Length: 284
Image (cartoon, rainbow, N blue to C red; front, side):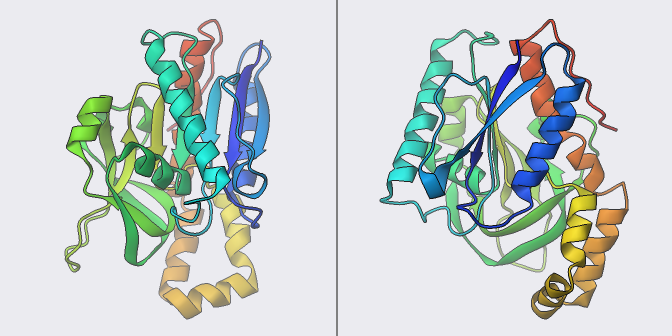
């Protein structure tokens, strides 16, 4: 029996690389999973107001454009938060490591939404955009977390955002039995707190601020477009553009993250949900 995967698309119909990269990664991992692999269904959350039921085993909630507060007062956000509430309460009723629990990973925009819903920290706009393949540091908890198996500390990740989650709530994290797994690079030249980059709130549910699905080959093609090149140079400078392209081509940067985080998440879910199957992760 296949593992049932729901992708929650929060891109609101805007062209993006994220959904393509998630689809391709799931196809590759499905081929490595014994049995029937992965049965994947997509839900267009912001544009069509679609949210999944709890009939799926695994949920991946995507990045997306705009503010994490754009949905306030809209039906789609109400339904998204209701789905998240139902998912959490379902897992709370099941024993730890039960094969009936649901597994979920929240990416970028969805990560900020998750942090809003659980009041995990202050979600605010950055003073300036984070843009590039950026250094990410693991916390003590993150060094032990299987989500980052195969990655060095620090590791590099695709990070493109105007918003951030800061001032994590220790009260809420303790209540949920969660922890901060990663924080952004240290910036001693600016007087701002380092943003959280990953939080786990249970054995089955975690979120990351960066884009673990980002693939170097696809991103290199994307950024090689002359119009995008010109846009990046105008807003971030030629040096930043060349740094991004170098880090896409060097396997010690983005490739290791792409080959580790989402595959690790799927591997750990499969071990609980289908212990008879073996999901091989090509992490280095």
